[in-house]
Length: 191
Image (cartoon, rainbow, N blue to C red; front, side):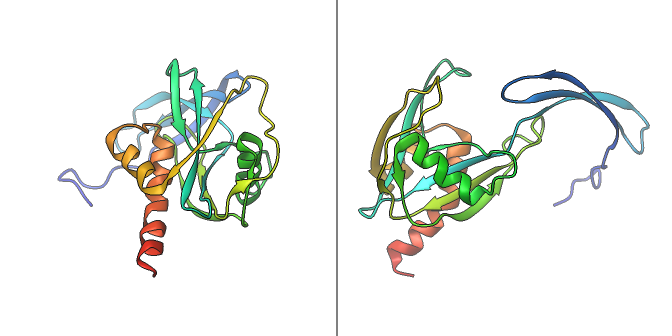
């Protein structure tokens, strides 16, 4: 894919300076120079840890969902389980851990469906999407101090319809469902 103006340039990173460090991310000013124009600009980049989102499929073809209050939008969001990957933790270990902590569900060994960049304009991290099949309630939840989560299950096709009609509007959940849908369609066709 190219434009009439040609290929975009790779800016040269000149340096960075920490601005703030919080519980959820570090914020940096990053200085870049355009290679052809020679202009220099400061940009703000947030460095959160990597994340994992879990598509948990039950034996009766339901997806495990969570509904919780989200401070960024000052409202409730319908999502799939997920959270922060601990430093050095494998996404295939983090996914089942987050599923278990948030919902009490466990299942078959996780497999990676894909990895996405949540917002490469300002965020440096990745979000891994894992699938856990044969998900079933198995243990008590272990919520973080400020978490209060409603746990529910819905048929796969109902969840996909909610994603299409705005009932689910969390972008990373939509990414996960987009990565899961071909797997689901192949399964339904018996492929």
